[in-house]
Every structure is written in structure tokens, then in C-alpha cells.
Image 1 (spheres, rainbow, N blue to C red):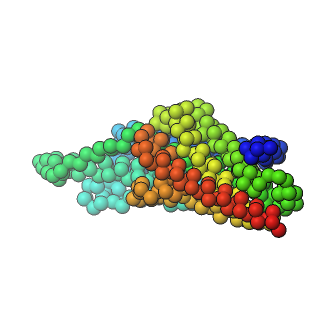
Image 2 (image 1 turned 30 degrees about the horizontal axis):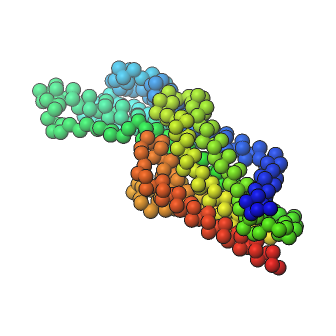
Image 3 (image 1 turned 180 degrees about the vertical axis):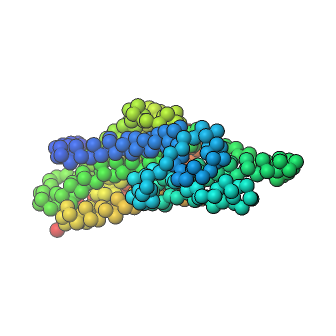
Length: 390
């Protein structure tokens, strides 16, 4: 039997073993197919809730009866004024009230007439994200009211209000629709990477440390197959499972767009078969490299539990790299492409932004994955050869 046929036999045997554990495979498939779209739906639900609150134009005010002038201004801005509950501070602390409360003191109108600025309070809780999100809106409303009152006072004295504004500032946002969508969809590369990692981890640990613990690795090494052939066959099976999970995870975001609740998110986040295909070309080499890396980590371990503990380090490192890219204040750096998982995150973010990557960037990430995969497979084959000699 030729070397390629031996490796193929090992591949089919390991792949069938990986697919035979239906419970584990079902959990991995559900997590890869459901987790990412679920996160996207949660983001869209959050944005849709914020949009609905903005459209409702509701303002919670305590003591509005003391400020008819302010009431007039707010109603002219088409806001609906509501009274807060008696225990609104407790409700804000418990995150059961989703709007900040504007507190108007007694003597508000008297203060306006006497030019003694009345003190208004915007009550919120930094631990209540829904209420905290509305504080800026309330402050902008009050700033508009203050500017209107100042203009009226100056006008009554024959002074042009434009004298207080020697310059005019206009904001211009140069971000494209795709780049704004990428900010909302930053969770997509992270979820896809995690799906690939979890898809490879179970099969990689079972085919190495799992077989050692069950006592089936030593009889396997007594066969005519060489350690290199065994390594290639086992790696091909693990990599196939990881690549299958990667494909399912990338494709799962296409039907997830049909359930997006926010119209703005649906309009900005354009993810189709083209984007899914580009994702796959980026992820498939990484899936092979992660499969080899997890096998190299697990081949040293004597039990499946020990292999899980060691693989947790790889899981933590891979999950940390996309977060590093998210929170980096300096943006993309050339060395990012030389770090596995981080380079793939950068390339996938470009796909979501609709940017074309230079030919050298995907090649750099590909070469890094190939080198990592080769080094890990050499280590696994060396470990199997050492085990066969004992």
C-alpha cells in the first residue's frame, strides 16, 4: 500500500470517528451556526430599540409644572412629556427605568426673569445603559433651550445673537456606509474564529490525547503506517471538520440578515455569497493551522482532561487577538498580518468594509499559517515516532 493510500485510510477512519460522536458534533454545529447570527440579531435589536426610542420622542420630567416656558419649548420640538414614578431613583439604579429623568426645581420661571440661572438636574445611573444612552439627548435639548433664551434676551435689547457666534462649526462624516456597518458587525469575525477553533478542538484532542487515554494509540503505531502518514491522515480529518464548521459559520450570516429588526443595520450590513466566499479563502488556511496547533498541544498530554486544560491556553490566545484589534487605538499595523488569527481578523474586517486588500497581505497571512501548520505537524510526527520506539 502506497503512502498516500495509507494516509487516506487513516483520514477516513479518523473522520468517521469524529462524525460518529453525534452529540458533540451537534453541539459544535449549533454553536457555529447559531452563535454568530444570534449575536448579530442582538445587536440589531439593540439598535432597533434605540431607534424606536428616538422616534417616540419621549421625555420624563419631574416638576414640569414649574416651567411653562420649558414645556412650550419641548412641545415645539414635538416631545411628549411624561411624569416619572415616585421612586424613579431606585428604578434607575435597578435598570427598570430606561429613560433619564429631568428634575425642574420650583422657582424656575422666576430665575429666568431675574437672570438667576435655575439649576436643572438630569438624573441617571451609569450602571443603567438604556437610561445613560438618553442623557446626551436631554442635554442637547436643554442646550437648545438655553440658546433660544439667550437669543431672545439679546434681541429684546437690540443686540444681534450672531455676535456671540464668531465662527460656525459644521461636522462632516467621511465614513462610508460599509465602514459604519463594519463597526456594528465587528462581532462577525470574532464569532467565525471561535466557531473554527471549537470545531477543530474536539476532533484534535480526541485523535491524540483521547486515543492515548483509551490505549488505542500504541496499537495504531504498530501498523505499517509511518508516523508521517498517521500525522497527515489525522490532521486531514481534523482540518476537514474545522473547515466544514468554517463554511457553515460563514454562510449562516446570510439568512440571519432576513431577521434583522433594524432597518438601518439591514441597509448598512451587506453580507452575501461574495463576502462569505472571501471569508472562506481567509479562514481555510487558518483552520488547517489551528488543527495542527491543537494536535501538537494535545499530543504531549496523557489524558483528555489534561489536553483540554492545555488547549484552553490556545483558546484564550485566539479569542484575545480579535479583541486586541477591536480596541487598538492606532488602527491596523503591518505586523498584525504576521500574527495568526489577528491577521485573519484584519482581512475579514476589510471585507466587511468593502475594501480591497493588496495581494501581498493575504499571501502574508497564508504563509504564516502554512509555516505554523508545517512546524506543528513535524512536531506531532516526531512525537509519534518517539512513542513508537518506546
